[in-house]
Image 1: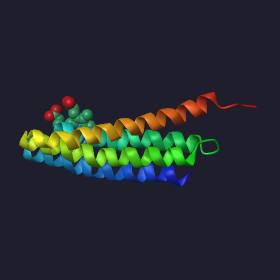
Image 2: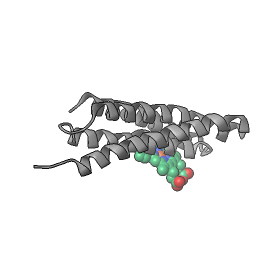
Image 3: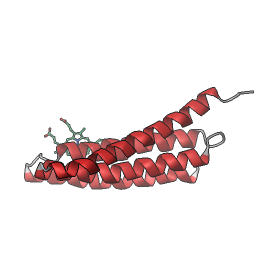
Length: 128
Ligand code: HEM
């Protein structure tokens, strides 16, 4: 497995570890205010990052390493910016949080666009 795939899985597993404890806390406290942040940490941080990591593991021989690491950097920064901003917005309803939330969303979308380029390269590459 290329290191970039391991990085995606490492980051994803750390996200879901935090996400699971967060979910347990929600259940135990019977306070579901943070549910959207919990859901996004798990789905963007764990599920999406693991899918990226799987794709790069499957295309280890043909992928662009630089593109894959760019995908990782943008997506990881996106989660690390978006989820805390979303949690802060849910907790405070303060619109001052919106710029960082939007920045996190933009990074997350840019990460996906990088992934799309990688998928595009793989689809159109010459085969023997
Ligand atoms: C120890 C593990 C987990 C616990 C204790 C937990 C706990 C919870 C709780 C208490 C809720 C609120 C439920 C409600 O009020 O309807 C919730 C919602 C949610 N969780 Fe988790 N969760 C866990 C893991 C995960 C994972 C691994 C994912 C995704 C990969 C996930 C995705 C979601 C989603 C999408 C929602 C929103 C569901 C809705 O809108 O009805 N959770 N979780």
